[in-house]
Image (cartoon, rainbow, N blue to C red; front, side, top):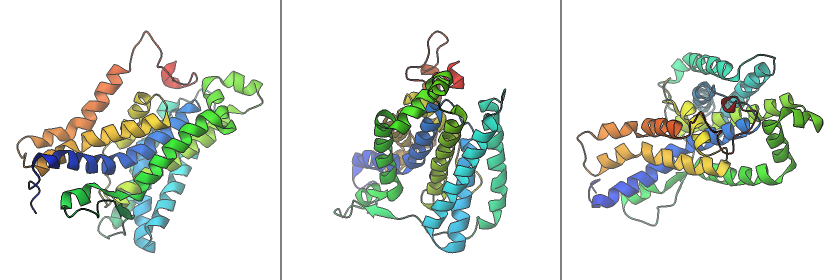
Amino acid sequence: MEATDIGLWGVPLAMLGGAIRVSTPFIFVSIGEAITERSGRINLGLEGTLVFGAMSAYAVAVMTGSPWLGLLAAMVAGLCFGLFHGWICKFPKVNDIAIGIALMLFGTGLAFFGKPFIQPSAPDLPAIPFGAWSDIPQVQAALNVNVLFLIGAALAVFLWWAVRNTRIGLIVRVVGDSADAARAMGLNPNTVRLLATGVGGALAGIGGAYLSLYYPGSWTERISSGQGLMAVALVIFARWNPLGCFAAALLFGGAGALGPALQSVGVTQGYYLFYAAPYILTLIIMIATSSPSRTLAGAPGELSITK
């Protein structure tokens, strides 16, 4: 069956499948960054974490034959990056943003060690064929959902609830809103932020593992295409809400799937311009949420970008 056999229905189907595939790394990176920023720290090094996590996952999966061990390796790599970022930022007069940029360059530079793994093929993470009921290949492809997408959706709901209703969530929110209030409660803001940044890094590592072990499912040094930085804008757009991050990630994923969706129904002239849609959307969001006269609604009081 040709891609155009189902006519214009191919566009929403392709966008649905593309939104699910493209949004998954955004979900993990943005949720992790939301937790980090809720504690009052921003991590712009997620691009480097994403790339190094993708490389670690692919290398370990190639050597062991297990994508799950690759995923674990990416989590550990991301955790180490996050903890390192959090440890450096606890020192006086150290700027979160500057350190994040340095670690972004450091992480992408370390990806050089992944060159031997560009050619070998690694096993993929499994997907669930929710479209098996249909005989139409486009429906089957659109509803072939990777398990990490489902885990990310469940994680978004859980963290949304946990931030609002648990003691740990309260601690993270207090530290993010006022370090002085946290100290008055007997909390150590540096420790809380260190752990929150570590969690954010581990989740970013999972996003990197998805890129190399499922979609696109290969390893190259430029595999992230700026997704780590776009996730920071996504968190601001979602107002530091994990559920909002999930919805915004789907929006970004749908924008990223626009070009391939048009191609699937035979639009061959200029369709590649639509590949820029996620980057244009990021720019629009940053402009729309920026104002010198008002603070961002829901922003943690201790966050660098709100001061």
